[in-house]
Image (cartoon, rainbow, N blue to C red; front, side):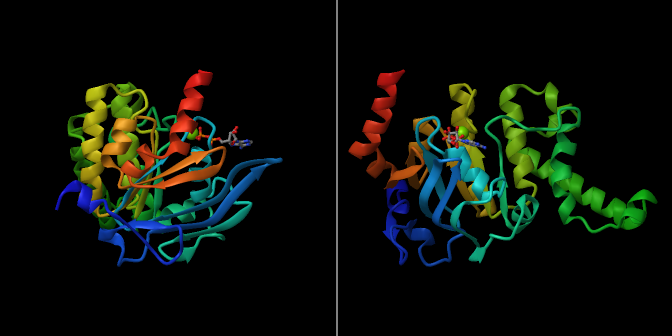
Length: 282
Ligand SMILES: Nc1ncnc2c1ncn2[C@@H]1O[C@H](COP(=O)(O)OP(=O)(O)O)[C@@H](O)[C@H]1O
Ligand SMILES: [Mg+2]
């Protein structure tokens, strides 16, 4: 099967949702229905209807200020939506807070890197696993067998995650001593450590050089293939977006102005207008 055939989108019952043929017979990982938020008069995101298939790489693009990061903040309950519904694995997450949404399956990285700079690379990953560990506090304090067993499991799993980016040698380095690109990669690993079914990446290639970006692109694909998870990606690097995304939604002033395959998006006059309009301003 060629890449193009794989990425063929098919309409599903709740229009105008589109899923890849590969995921069409599985329940979607995420459904946003009429999602929106208003910040004192400003509709930062309005009528956001996007469905994401179980193993899909979806792009969320649009000019600066379009509302992309706000969508991530809604999905992770940093903000409570003003209206609309979010279904994660078919369940309404209305009553969940940020930590509960993470446990339910959404993990994210941030547009501006947020790591524990003074902690080691490995510790930055293992702290994210804490919710999955079962030793009690006394077992931890007294260093009882279950504590060591779980510490060992966490170490092994952290090393496994680090191997995705060939970063095992950096396990004991302080996070803030890493070069910028490596810090971005570590953030992705920390998000993966929480075992998400949906990984949200906010401009992962920002500040990376072309060869780092090309490598990241391959890594995002292999993360999806290895973990069989969905990825929602905000990114300005159009080469990356058009190459790895199967579905793309374009936001402009809080509205989805286009949705479809990379080809649909590249040929959409409204999208071209939104981007060219922005270039003229700049
Ligand atoms: N907490 C907030 N309070 C008020 N306005 C906000 C807040 N967060 C975002 N906005 C506004 O919402 C719009 C979308 O912002 P954002 O989602 O960060 O855009 P993008 O990530 O697409 O560049 C912007 O006009 C921004 O100023
Ligand atoms: Mg943003």
